[in-house]
Length: 218
Image 1 (tube, rainbow, N blue to C red):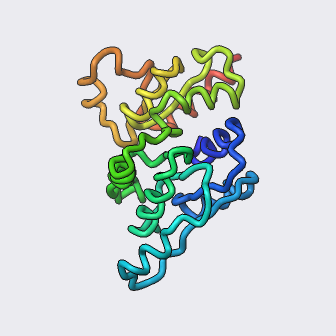
Image 2 (image 1 turned 120 degrees about the vertical axis):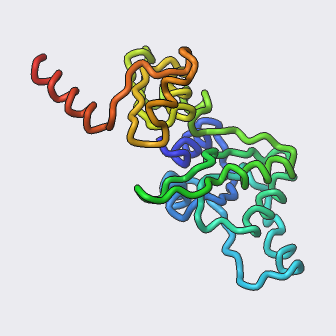
């Protein structure tokens, strides 16, 4: 589940009806608006001076939450505006974007957005409610949305030993690590026994082939 959809679930579950200030991506904001959330954003101007920065980041009104997620268009003005809204202790702080690496293409991986999140958290002295992997809260959301009465009957597939497999184990899911992503086989074997996946495969294609073969015999 995408972090923005987890945020949407959380906002509705906790009956947050006030507008929210979002520094998520344009696509994420559309998802929130389509879900009935009153989303406020900031479109930074070019050549921002300190005086302009103070003016455009001044809180418009009381917000129910500040939302943070991966956003390639994130700017310093967005970060400043978020900190100013979070000065209101009644304003909740929801976040995805905790990865320190962000795969862009098969050949390109760039720094993630976790340091920007840490900057906001450190400056405001506010700990965000994390709604993405590997937070247990996401597991609770998934169990509720998909009615997973028995977590052990759910197979969680991912390519990260920490974010995917660690998340699956904490939530009580079965876990499958695919080795075509961020975790090589050597790193998996070097991990503590309690941190290793239940299963592993070279790629998701191998799992699909296995699943198809099993289905044909049932």
